[in-house]
Amino acid sequence: MASIPGIDGVLFDLGNTLIPFTPADSMEFVLKWFHSIPGLEGQVPFPDFLETFRSVVRKERERMLDQEWETNVGTRSEMMENALIERGFDQKGISKLLKATHTGAFTSCLRIGKNGRYVLDILSTSTTETGKKLKIGLISNAGDGDAIRQFLDRNDLTHYFDSIIISAEVGFAKPWKRIFQRGLDEMNLSPDRSVYVGDRYRIDVLGSREVGMKPVYIRQYHTAGEPPEGVEIECTRIEHILDLIPLLENGGLLN
Image 1 (tube, rainbow, N blue to C red):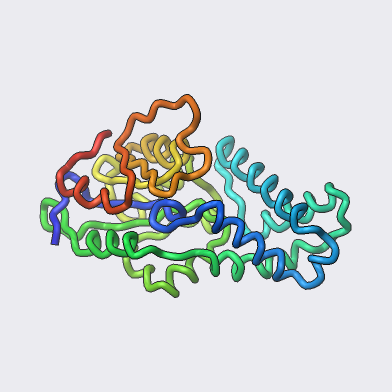
Image 2: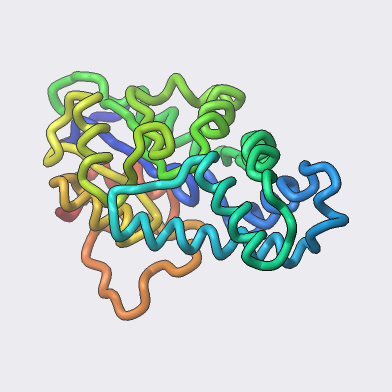
C-alpha cells in the first residue's frame, strides 16, 4: 500500500489516458457502426459515411471548446442524418437506426490494457498522508454514456471509481469548469489536493487547472493534434500511465 503526499484524489480522463482510443480504434468503430445499419452499404459508400462522421466530430469539438456543450448519441445521430442529406444522400429518418446501433458498435471497440488496470489497482490500495483511502474518479467527454458504463462493467472497472462523470449524461463537457467541479463535489475533494490526468492540453490540462486542480498531461498514445502546435506545455508531463505511480509517491507534481 502506497502513501501519496499532498493528494486526496486522482481523477482520470478515459480515452487515450486509461485506455487506448487511437485512429485505428476510431476507424474500427465507424466500420462497425456503418455495417450495423441494414441496407446502408448499398445506399451510402463507406468513404462518404466516414467523411460525414469526421465532419460531425469536428463540429462537436468546435462547439465543445466554445460553449459548455457535448454531444450525446441522439444529437450525434441527428447531426449524421442531416450531414448525409446535405451530401446528397436520401437518408431521412436514419437517425433512429444510427442511435440504436451506436452503443453496441462503440462498446466493442473499447479495451483496457493491463497497465491501466495495474495503475488503478495500485491507487485503489493507496492512502493519503493522513491514512485515508485515496479517492479515484473518472471524467469523460464521451458522447455515449451507456457504452462507457457497459464497458466499465464488462471489464470489472466500475468498482475502482468513487465518481464517474460522463458529459453525455450531465449535459456539459470539458474544458468547462462545471464538469470538473461536479467530480470534485461528488467526491468531496478540494481542487488543490486533487490531480487530473488527461491527454488533451486545452481540454484536460487547462480545464482542470482552471478549477484549481493539478493537471498531469499524458502522451502515451500520441493523440492526434496533441500537443497543440506552437503551445509550450507548462505542466507535469508523463509519457506512460505507469509513470504516474512514482510521480505521485514522490510528490513530483507541478501546479
